[in-house]
Length: 292
Image 1 (cartoon, helix red, strand yellow):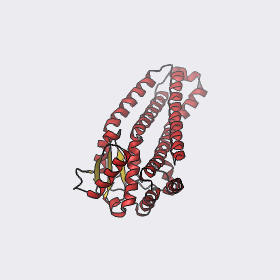
Image 2 (cartoon, helix red, strand yellow):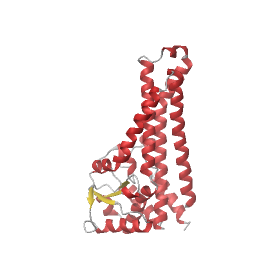
Image 3 (cartoon, rainbow, N blue to C red):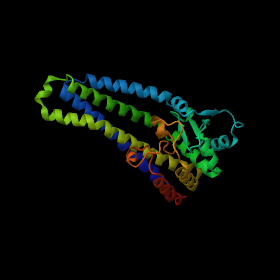
């Protein structure tokens, strides 16, 4: 259990370092080819400002996009409220705001920049098919995202992806529509630079997805540690796979927030999926069960 958590944390650090290497490489390329750091610094500033805006408004955007309705008291939905409240007491974290999404597709998500500003939501489809132990496992997974500050990490990565995409786009446009005349003196560097500019956003997106998948594994492990019953979450994941269907209100920008991929990608699209295969997650949870 603890080894799995440590491994996922190390992998996240490695992917963040890879992001920084990509940004640094593009910055060096911009400085070398165009003899100026101005564009690079400007795009980093814009991307950082946009990421900061997303950081403080991501929860409201997610709730609006999903059509979630707040459960304001235990009387509104006793079962879900009691489950979340017990988990909050167990983990010593503040009680998050609780929401219901009217959708037959079984799913759940959490957001919030820290435990003091946390939000958890479950669909009506999830509540219909899960027993109490399975529902507890799902909600423990979602609170694991909050306790692990996953939304904070997601916003950092999002800002880096925006910076990489913006820098690459600007450099490509300058190369084809003006650019620095000195580029003609460095054809090899120019060709290498164009390839790097075109490939960098794709690499950045793949790394972003890798981080999202690692955080899912980590939230599974955190949830299992909270409930001390990983089999409950494993059964819940198998039900999500068996009864899963596309969400009515799909939005790719918040797909990574859900416990199961709401877009149900095809075979080709799975390379770009925000979630690891459920079979892999269940296998890890079964291995963790032997550690208690």
